[in-house]
Every structure is written in structure tokens, then in C-alpha cells.
Length: 155
Image 1 (cartoon, rainbow, N blue to C red):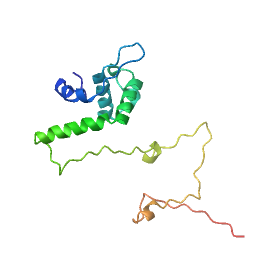
Image 2 (tube, rainbow, N blue to C red; image 1 turned 90 degrees about the vertical axis):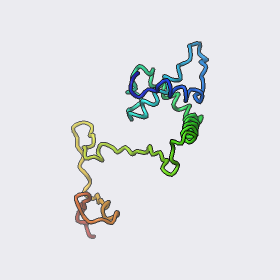
Image 3 (cartoon, one colour; image 1 turned 135 degrees about the vertical axis):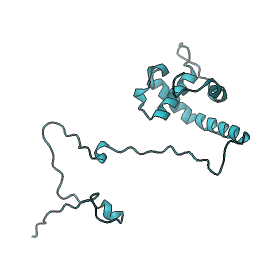
């Protein structure tokens, strides 16, 4: 058993809630447990779909299953069934129940890395650029903001 894969006990709980797909192409249908394990691997590791290990099958196929199941509400039904089971067993505290899976991915340049510039021609930053992030956030001047100004021509 590899990391991030469902145990037999976990699969026996979830299996009735996962729809069976019948292949229309003449090929045998893909194992839904393998697809769910692939989806769980991606969700737990945060890796891109292309980095999915080969043991889960083609990443496009796993993504297709994920997309269809998400659209059809399969994951909502699984979560609801697990909540009901945990509530029945007295293992869930509804005052503390919360799921937060949000994250924001910033661009490389937001972390201080330089922007990619094609060829040998480099562009200079505009001197007219004014950054007011700290002032807008009502914080004192610090190294997080800067002001760049140029003299204006008077007519």
C-alpha cells in the first residue's frame, strides 16, 4: 500500500457512493478506486496533474474523473455520508466543524524573482510608477512600499 491511497476499510465505506462508469469504447472501464486514489494523491500533495505517478493511470483520465465527479456532486455526497457516520458514532463536534482548502498562488515575481525578458533587450521599469500599497493599507512607510517620481514639464 502506497502513501495517500485509501485502505480497504476506507474504500468499503466510500465505494457505494462512487458511480460506476461503463466504457462505451470497447475497452474495459477504469477502476474507480484507482481514479479516486489518484485524485486524493493530487489533493493531498498539491502537485500539478502532470506530476501524477503512473500507477494511477494517465493524468488526463484521472482529471476527467475528478471533473465529472465534482460536477455531479459525488464529493458532496461522500462528505455528507461521512459526516452522518461520524455524527452517529459521536466523533464529530459540530461547533468545531470546518473545512478550509483555500490557497492563493502568487507569481514568481511577487516573491522578488525577476521577470522573464525575451532576448537580450531588457526593459527598464517606468519611472512614473508609483506604488501606494502601504499608504492604502494605512501603514507606516517601510521597505514594503516605494515612491518613484519624475519632474513634470510645465508649459
